[in-house]
Image 1 (tube, protein in one colour):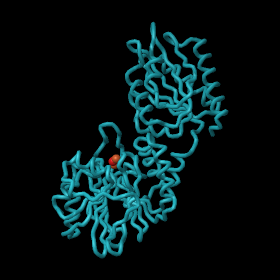
Image 2: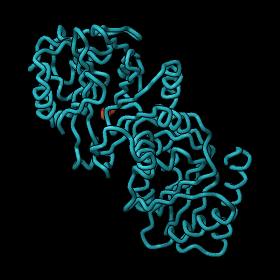
Image 3: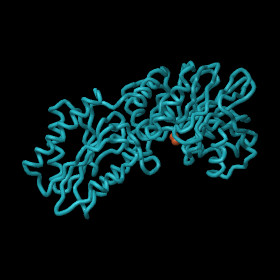
Image 4: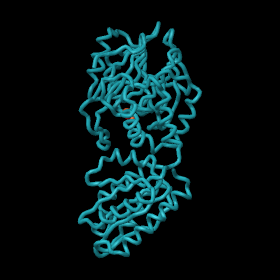
Length: 394
Ligand code: FEO
């Protein structure tokens, strides 16, 4: 993508990665992604905000050539993860005069990642500023969105926030700005769930920290820019601060149909009682959708058959994933079938120490569920309804 000037003297110079389908060898990218970088020309100095993925440095370098950039004063590194910092060595080689601006913690990480010389760096304190002449960059330390070294850059005169990952969405698009709010809301929520939710407390602090700023535009480093910043700021407040909703998330596996019968019964019973349920067959599920469902869930129910005494390995994966994402769920339980003996409950319980949940007594059945097992599931549904009511989940 060629550079595009969206404010006089400010250009989008990053890369759209239409074909990437997996991030961190973990996160599905159904809509691709982008690595946005921004060039800001001041009356005296020029700064580049973030770079691009290590696999695509030539696109960024070509864009800087296209704009006739012969001299670069600053490379601002808001975040050290290589999808944004991967081209720093290439930009730094092309513009050896450029100082790399980052937090002290980012300097250490970038040196570890790219073996860059320490003298290339200028670290900035929280709220420190750098003048580009008629434009001022203010650096807002915002640790743990989602690495420990992260900062945001605020361009004061133009009221533009460059938050890198914060508020981002994995969408490959030619749109510079959000045009389809529904599509971006879903992609940004998925992104929040996968990347930011484990750091919910820090996200809350950082949302509070930027409350006093006036933003006309949020230009993040994945997905389209927000011309109406309240849209994404309000969404983040909802995801990070709101109490869970009257929702059960139910990832499950069934090998011979017994656990599936239990899942079907429980889902139907909960639905009849007014509880929303999102169920995921972990043999085919999009884990991004599962993560997204967990943002609002009041209860997680894990449905697993017993394999070699323990839970099915894909359910162990679901439990480990939920544990790592640290959703704000309040209740958890397990349902499933076994043939002759099971330690599935004990094993799964040991895999979710990060979930600060009340455990509702599990329902396991031997072989195919019988009438007594369905009655136990009915009781479980009633218990979940009661717990959600007591907790005020809506
Ligand atoms: Fe988009 Fe944390 O990297």
